[in-house]
Image (cartoon, rainbow, N blue to C red; front, side):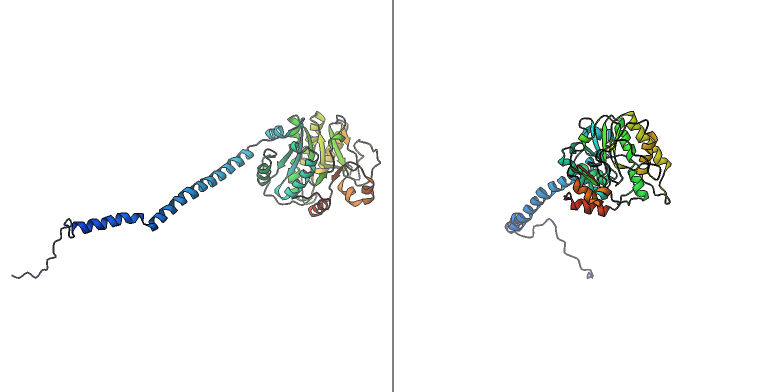
Length: 341
């Protein structure tokens, strides 16, 4: 019976269908094709990529890792460590700054550096951006005292944010006093035109400046001025020098108490300065106080609004800004030739 099925030819896969010499020649050509110019170029490119980009990736990873370690270090940096690092001759110069006011800090530091007192400066950062930025450029000269205030904007004078910002000040100063250091506090909306330390005569507990624009006699009293219309004095909390005495510590504690008793509200819109004045007035008989000379430490209201007085003060040493508007302050400082950054 004839078969109707077509049988596929059986091929032996192991059988060599081609002569040995041609197959060997083909294999040889294929093996040598690996070293063709195109393949060599691809191999060289791979070596370059591995040799250049992988180390760079490791460097980048190292940089970011180092940055994180550095930031962690500054987050753990304490006020005691910072004060010990910057103190010279038992004295620390303190300012409190948030990120929006870094241009003011730069300007103030220029003037302090000219008087060769910059190594004593400790910036109390009121946000982590300021902490990292200052310590990146000037390691060890900034510290943040927890808790950090909320995300920072340039708070307006009289706002709750401004009150929250400034009300932390006496606690910082008290802590430094308790560590045993003299401490000078400065707002950064001022500049030094000369060295203020020669004016800190004697061994008084607290030194301060008057915020009144009225012209004082050339050799005015250094006692606490009499109260004004509101029943208290008008001493400026922008420039204070404290010795680590019981009297100075008492002032700081009373200042803290007064701030608690006079919290910010929409009706009052208080700030830290009235509380400081009440603390001075209520402890005047217990603490050795010293009013600094007006000719050397004028308020901004006097310096910028009484040109006849300014022109007569050839020995003017120290200028304090007194505007409530930051743009006005910055414009004035620029006109004085102090703006650098």
